[in-house]
Image 1 (cartoon, rainbow, N blue to C red):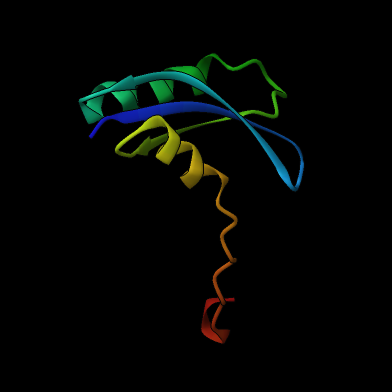
Image 2: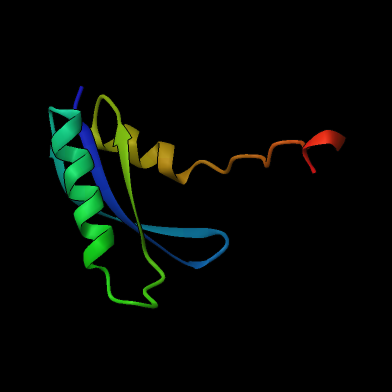
Length: 78
């Protein structure tokens, strides 16, 4: 399964815009691209760059679109 690198912008809390940058078979190459894109981003840019491991581009996009619940903090974690 390949690794996909996406640029994610979120104009509002309900909508994420995903832009595929590239995909790789090796983890190291995908990680390198994600790090380079983060470093090259202009200051103040609201986009984030994420790498996803998935069987297809559609599955990767679905994983990034998922709304995850925030973890419950225990009293000792606060």
